[in-house]
Image (cartoon, rainbow, N blue to C red; front, top):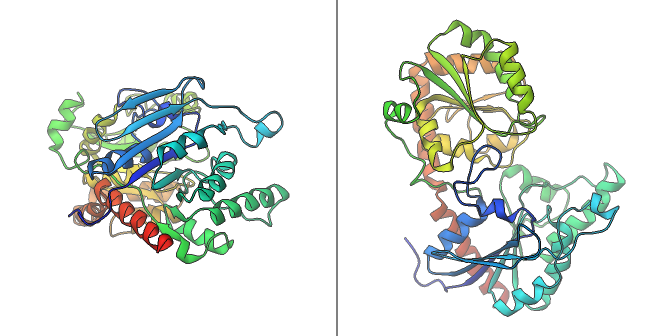
Length: 409
């Protein structure tokens, strides 16, 4: 239920990226194999639905144009990029810097400015945040992308650590996605405990939900007599290792004529993927999609008997949340960020990264142990109901209001 007593705010969501056209793209455009809306536009939309005046700001695609898009619940500005740092500084920071953007923001008179990718767009934010604080604008900074660095590992790490320390010090509140990042913020003394807040990814539960399996398979023009294993990720080593999964399952797939693997994704290692599929004689056993529209993804989850995410590191993977919401059993790497949402033998199965025998055994378990599979599905589905974008957005509005009251009181 919406608390009508909360003040209606003017909120700016800013991401200092030159790829703004990807972040707010329509659902028909292509990026890394799956078209999607990312964290920032979902928040703009949901907070706008709650009655707040919301503005999204990024840099324009060509770096020169000022583009204004008025959407149903928020306004989106693509500003000129300004300039990029000269060589060799552009080797350290490749994103644009636009000093004039500060004046634009001041004229908008926001109550809150929510910065996305605090450590990723560090140079621009290091310039911007002090000016915003001088004008007494509350700065809520979100960590996405780069993690806190260990300052004693190298001189370059120390340089980045000093910048991260200053960014955290200057921000009113620092938001993080998973427990590991929160631990690192405190371990490296970047933030005090009362200044950081865990705010996980949300999920569109109106889109991702259980559907009739046979109808989904037919809609995708797949074979209803086949059982499918699904992987959704960018094809890029070393983070996303689809190749170890293929190597683990090649004999299992060949021995079971009614089981196939679906891989959705694009990326720099796509040629290697195509080569490995041919090398292992799996052309008839692996179905690869370079690109799938975001709104079609629930069809794939609901068509599949299990979902595998095999990653070396992650933030808070939305694909696991999407699988949970569609009641698709999950097999995932046993890494800290994934352990925050997948509990082994309770809401999914965890396997050690690149352990082929564990991957194979987990898949066999899903296909043979219906009692365990149903338990995983039920627990995961119940868990994910607390992660709607509505709840995430509503909790952030409460946090904004609390910060305005606390600092102004």
